[in-house]
Length: 205
Image (tube, rainbow, N blue to C red):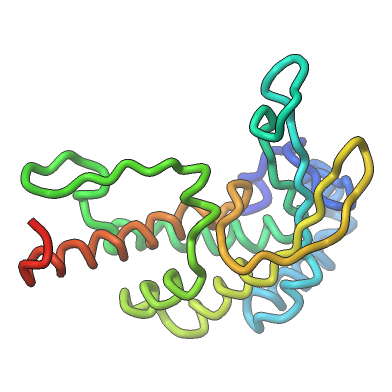
């Protein structure tokens, strides 16, 4: 299901093989791909080996002269996306029980916060996501698996066709990661819960 839900030619990762390759030649590579992904999903092993992400800068204008005139896109590997999409497919069934309706509707008397999403994704603290998920009642092994997915990432920027050095972040979510949307909602719910608690305690009006 995860593989069928992936765009065939979207964002090939470091090895340049798009999802189409795995989809078309599943009868050849399927058994090995399945074994690799299930080992990560069931035992939490091997995430780091497939979690290298290439960042490509796409020009927003005809002749860009500054970095803000580029849009960065993350190219995750197909194997990582298979794992992340499988987890995301499970998450979507419980998100309705985790997220307050106030996040998607205008409710009188409740504070609204407008966020710059491009910057907000970059600033998400991993420990905060972990604590909120535990507080919501997610099983510890499940939380550990998700934390491995987001914390073992490494980045390489491609500039003028050449790869730069590899570096590791200490926070943030990738906009090309199938998990990021759900994790950002969980993070936002944590913030909403803290605001509701502060209101109940008379700390904010």
